[in-house]
Image 1: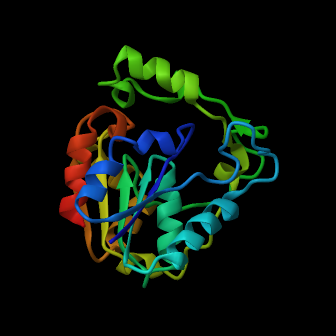
Image 2: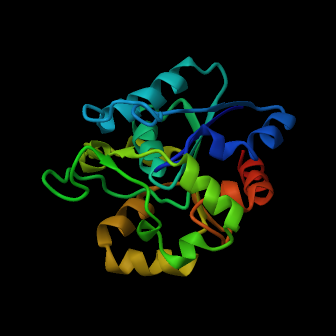
Length: 226
């Protein structure tokens, strides 16, 4: 299978380094994407959500084998949108510490400006657990600002083609119990989750970035789903 790994806010392709060898050893063709505007010296002022979705769709279209598309944190939104654009090509959509949900435009709202700079204040204590001091230092050193317009943009998801794509939520910085509470508190999120015909939730309690803190276990979860 073709496995496409997509990093979310601030982390680059390097953040999947501990996952890739295990997937490749199991016989899968693995690509880790670097999205537009997420390189250290990139221009970010003209990068929007459509640019990130297009980069993923191009990689999906280029694949010969069925695709397992895996997105960490905000990249879960990109997985969802790509699955809606290419439902026949994506055999498995994986949301790592993320979930499918409505994607509405937020003009004039936070985050303001051109880019979102890395800050530990953006993460809860649960989302930071299990990170070693060395990992925290490495993240601070390598983190890249994220194009803010990507977050402000919306997407038309009215047709629901993504709902037929087999999907997996890997809950790490939140629990399955949290997810059930969100169904109640945010009915639109619950409706999106319930519309999926094949959706599984697996808990792996650890940080917002399990590919850093528990890579072996995350890799096994991905391999089992694949």
